[in-house]
Amino acid sequence: MPRQRTVNHFGLLPASREKGMTLVEIAIGVAVLGLVAAGAIAALMVLNKNAVSTRIMTNASEIVQRNIEAAIGAQFTSTSIPSILAITGSSGVVWDDDAGSDNQETIYTSRDGTGPTVKGTLTRTVTAETADANSPIRRVKFSLSYTLFGRPMTYEMVTLRAIDK
Picture 1 (cartoon, rainbow, N blue to C red):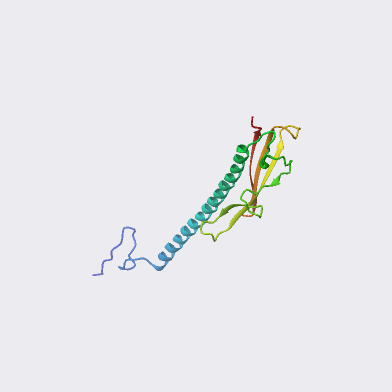
Picture 2: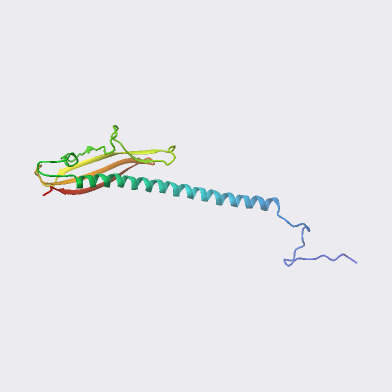
């Protein structure tokens, strides 16, 4: 009597009785995991670059805001005009508020000190609001220009400052 063969529910004969994964199945699994890992690493790198960019923009806005507040808070009378409110004309002048000798503002330094340092040039432009240079109203603009990832960036703020009464 011939030996009876068992057929699985797919209608196929089992290749062998051993259970486990073949080398091809393992290679495919490793390749899929590699693709997922590569995608995750790429996404983390983009997120880190965006975080650094946002941190630098926040620091730039704080530097400009600090100078705007200094201009607003300075005592300004007809007999006492502080240097921060002195007329510069429309081209502006480099303004160094961190007491450095390089006329550069340090916007960002990496936490561990080994990464890049981003520096920028702070420009102050003060004009009289009317045609008269002795006008008691000043338009004050601070601009911080820097380079980030090879692209020029600028952060600006403008305020009006009236003479103290």
